[in-house]
Length: 309
Image 1: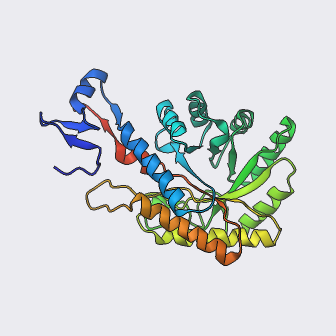
Image 2 (image 1 turned 90 degrees about the vertical axis):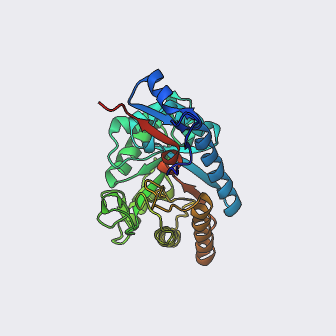
Image 3 (image 1 turned 45 degrees about the vertical axis):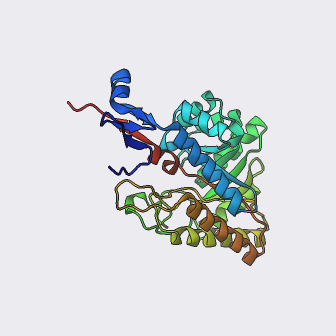
């Protein structure tokens, strides 16, 4: 029998297993619904991602787990132990990561409608990077940081205008997306100029995310070209060098047998080569390259078990 997930199998009793463990036995022991994750497989994926980045990219890099895929203490402990960063999109996810002992300075705080309370919480916790999604957030973060005597590093979320080859409901990089500052109409450039002028925030990078369940390499390569072009333009005017490029995640996984996801090596190599070539072409220093896989790490390595009523 062939499964869509490598962590699944059938034992000599003819019963489903995950990571070699008998699923019906686990269901009886713990009740259902029950999330079952193969820790060894998750750790192996994290290590393979880090190894691929090291092999294919000459600059500084970070693999950050997109914790909206699965936010729980044990997952954050694994990510800490495997040397990954994490991104969070709410105060609740940040609380869970910190409660698990994850270092705040390796957290990227996303979200396109952060509350004042969430911004305050992130500032007090000392998160490593706020990913700003709106002009209102830039001003609010600047004001709060000034009141607290802080100057946090931020990245701007940019909407590059790339329509990835996936379902329209999970395309997030389109021009009319609710996420981030639009590149094509000059909004992203205006946002960076405002951020540079604000005294209590420090713009260090740009972030984008073009969608989920993307199997093709071409949308990512196109996104890299657009984002690095923006970085080059901003270096020329207003003369601000952005040192981080966060390309998000969205790498497809297999849900059905006909899905053909790219390997970790293919995902990383294509992105790293595009960034390296772009930096050389535009005479830019190699940025710190960040990717944020979420379901790519946990999706193929876990299941949910139910009891039929």
